[in-house]
Amino acid sequence: MATMVGSGLANQTGAAIGALAFPVLGPLGVVAVRQYVAALVLVAVGRPRLRAFTWRQWWPVLLLAGVFGTMNLTLYSAIDRIGLGLAVTLEFLGPLSIALAASRRRLDAGCAVLAAAGVVVLMRPQPSADYPGMGLGLVAACCWASYILLNRLVGRRVPGAQGSAAAACVSAAAFLPAGILLALRHPPTAGAVLCAAAAGLLSSAVPYLADLVTLRTVPAHTFGLFMSVNPMLAAVVGWAVLGQGLGLPEWVGIGAVAAANAVSIATSRT
Image (cartoon, rainbow, N blue to C red; front, top):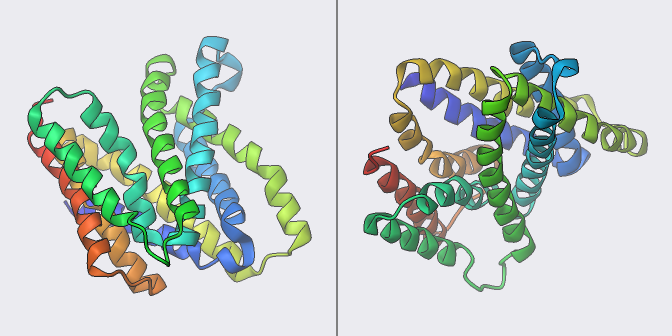
């Protein structure tokens, strides 16, 4: 339990710390640094043998790399516009949709309705609503759903963590030109780079390694159930670190999405 809590807090705290560098690096610069850090960690763990990959292995890895980079870029762009809590909640619709789409139970249909109601509350018309930011959060959700499906395919075709490591390398290479261009146009401060690097470590390296340890002792069902609290953790961390306060309707919407996921997993037999 302590490892799961630590993983969740590290993930959301890393995103919040990365947001502190937005004024200097922007979401693109923060994501670029995060991709570099993620690639270094995953390569050290996975040790991919890139020259041995066949085209049958390479094409899902390349798709995974594109989805991985797009997911992080749209999520951080959404965080910049609508705040950490709302952005993570909308992104969480991705894995929730995957879980509900494979089910034929009436209870899961009810969970889908509950989650949809939460999204309606979060995206309700109001003068301060940032619909482009919400749209970015939904794009991140689609990317996370694709990431799950592609990771499953890559895991079947590439041994160990080599596929994920290779995808991280490709994604980092794709962000390299943008990172160099941003550095030349607007030389970053040391503090901003440290914040972005901390985001990479806390949101990529720590959760990845912690989850490897956790899944050796905790059933996947229990692990998935705990993951449902991430939208709530994101809202709390956004308030504590970034001062992003939320009103009662936003808390209700976030709670509805988290509850829908928790109920679906808690009552699932698989």
